[in-house]
Length: 358
Ligand code: F6P
Image 1 (spheres, rainbow, N blue to C red):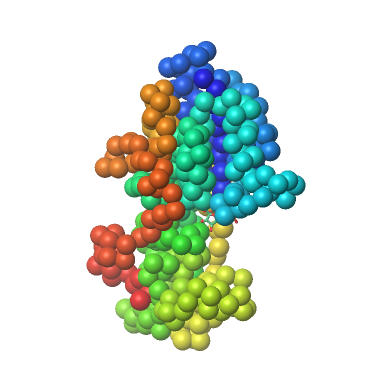
Image 2: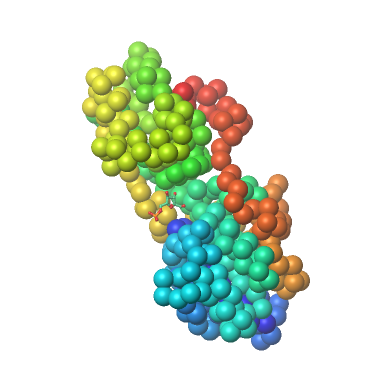
């Protein structure tokens, strides 16, 4: 059996651990009946036929290594069915050609939302595909947890923890901007875990006035500082009423490098305080996976290998009720898992007295 493996989209912690989980299980269960190939830089390698044979040594000592040994790239789904720059063929046709020429019996694809749309497209075109859910955003439909998420929560939490001490010393208001354009899972989890006072996520549009009120209430209660955990995709209540086109135009004109700087200015005007902004950025995606992600990727990797062994293609391995289960790619592709504003965890934050910025 010839199996091609690729990692696609933004990287995260645990990609190598997941590859190792798949490879070790396949070598263990199928022995020399299986040959693994590494496809370089995600779908780019599949489009250009850039792949190489691997062996069991390649998967040793990578459990704790950050990034991806295969490299990754972003290849937008909407371009898959358009002709590639250098030929008449579409990227999809090129990928199908590579699968045929390499005689891949199956592809193992590790990725997030965009990656899954393309994985589903390949599956619809007859390619045997098994996928694993990766992203620090935890916004993949069909699984309660994606790998990378818990490591990113650890990092964002550590950042907000550290900000607490300096905020206390100087009696300051701080904004820590965490990753997450469309989904606020990372901000919500790290915000609660680190004891942030105000949490702003894309799913709950904010009012600068309400946030300023929350800061003032804390001051009246004798608190020396306030810390806001703000998702990079946060939107104001005014923006939430705009059409997609209006929103895009308004954001293009926004004279700030990110939403947190605009919010900082608004809050400075409303509270009279100087507001400091800290952005950990890609730091949240780097370094070793946390133990919880090592465990999760290993379980997902084993399950993916078993699906391949049993010929159950066209599935993503997912977490549901703490069990690893297959979910059809057709059900996953194109759907986003955002934070339900009425979820228990949001309610818990509110019950604790946190402001959700609304
Ligand atoms: O999807 C993962 C993610 O890390 C998002 O949280 C973030 O908005 C985006 O990728 C950053 O993308 P890039 O690495 O292309 O800057």
